[in-house]
Structures are given as structure tokens and as C-alpha cells.
Length: 197
Length: 180
Image 1 (cartoon, rainbow over the protein chains, first blue to last red):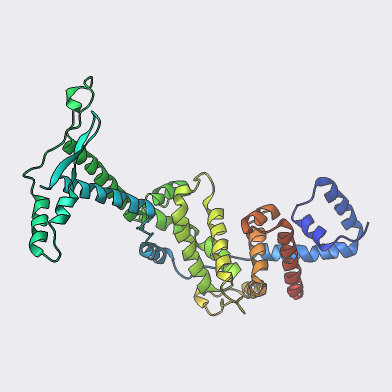
Image 2: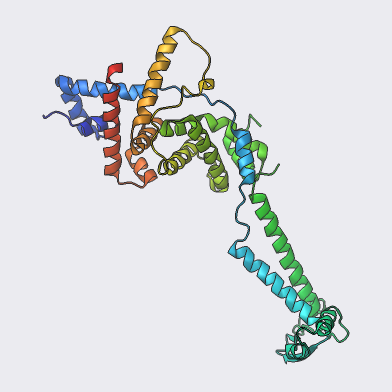
């Protein structure tokens, strides 16, 4: 048998050989002084590395790590969060427009749902930039509800009467759910930004 | 807290428990630091890599399987942190072990001093190896990964891993010949 190659000696010491090959190499190493010497040199390296003691840390790193962790903020403005925020703002906008005094019923759909939409044409035609009076009038109208007509959300007759929710209630409940969802997500994101006691 | 096992601490730390996370760091910082020190060959860089390792680990605690041992996982992260650093820095010309005497200031008997000098020599020679050699030495000899596991960890072909490991050993053995 030829001398063992460096790779074969390495694999021998790494226990990476199958049993048959290992036995063949064992026999060769007993007979070949040259290969046995090379194996011993490699063994010495293995022992040297394995007996290398651990170096002691100069200080406890935990306070520094905790401080660094607190500074590390994850990106708050994630696309998902932005979509949620957009949905909530959109809902608020729609609700605020519903309660203005320039709403006109223009849409009446199925038997389940009928509601009013803002008459933007009216608002825009009465707005002359930079007519501050018009702006003021529109702003005031946003917060006044003299002509507001709450549409109703009519459920099928077989439903219990308690479920006959008005659209206002429906919007109020939906908005509350959205707000809770948003606040919950914000709270989770804030907690994720660092370890909290 | 100190009597809680690692899995309990991980669960608490994943929920944001500061004390649990501190305890994890205190328990494993020595092992993580040593892995980083063997690869980077520099105390300050190794300390910094240790900190980064725990910060990274914290971000993945929620996904970590608590039935697995924590120490090997942390040391694996440490090697990855070191790999990223080595891509950006030159290999250390020499260990700064001497520049940090506070590491182990206690004087010992003569035999101990001789051993320490020998250990420093081995560390020094290790730090002189090219970074890719140091990485495979660390993963094979200190983290006891198989060739296949190293190949998977480093995303390198098995043949490259073997080649690097065998060359690293050959180089190191030649440099340490006078110690035999």
C-alpha cells in the first residue's frame, strides 16, 4: 500500500472513514513509520488545540449588551402597519364626511345597506381659495350635524331585533375595533424594540 | 433566576424579561467570547462580536427550539458575526492578549507560566492563519462540527471545506513544530 495522503490522515483522525477503510489504514500505520510520524504530528496539533484554555473575560458584558439592545429600534413604519393606519384614517375621514351638513343621499343600494355619500361638488363649488370665510364655513360644517340622516343597516327579518344595528353603531364598532387593533400593534412593536422589565 | 435552566430563561427572555436575558448573557458570554476571540484574534473585536451575537440571538429567541442546547447555537451565531467582520477587516497581525493583562492577572508557578506561554504561542499562530482557515478550525476543533455541518453552515462546497481544513492544519502544524 502507498503512503497515506494528508487528506487520508486528516479523515482518519476526524473519524470520517468507513470501518473497512479505517481497518486498512490501521494496518498500514502499524507497518509504516513515516506515516505514523506524520499522524503523530497531526495528533499533536489536535491535542494542542483541544487543550487550549479559555480566556477569561475582563468584565461582565451583560449591562453593555442590554444598553445596546435598548438603543436598537426595529423599523416601526412597516408596510403592514402603514396599511392599517391608512385604513383607520380612511375610515375616520369617511365618518367625518358622513356627519357634515352637506351630505345628500346619492346612493341607495341593496335591502341590506343604504347610506349617504358626501356631495363634494357642493362643497367644492362653494369654496373659493383663498376665501377664508368659505374655508371656515366648511370647517364648521364638518363638526355640525343639523341635517345628518343616519342611514340604517337593515338585516333580514329572521334576524333577532337586537342585531338591527344602525350604520352609525356599525361604524362606531368597526372604528373601535380598528383602533384597538392599531393600539395593540403599536404596543407590540414598542415592546419588541427592546427588553422590558 | 440562576437556578432556572436555559429553556426557561429563553422563554422568559423572548417575552421581554430583562433579568432572564441578563442571566443568559452571564452564563454564555465566556464561551461566546472565546469562540469570537479564536476567530478574530483580538480582545476588543471579540468583545464587540460577543455583544452583537447576543443582540442577534435575542431577536431570534421566539423562533428558537428550547429543546436544543443554547451554547452551540450561540457559538454558531458568533462565528457568523465574526465571518461578517472578517470580510471587512484585515487579519490581525498579532493577538493583543498581552495588551490586555487584566484577562488573567494572577501569577502562577513556573510550569504554569511555561504552559501559558505555549498557549499564547498557539493562539498567536492561530490568529496568523487566513480568516477562512481560522473559521474551519474553530468549527471543527472547538465546535466539533462534521465536514458536512461546516459545509452547510458556511454554505461552501464540502470539498472546499475539507481543503481549507487540511491546509490550515498543515500550516499550523508546521508553525508549531518547535513545540513538539
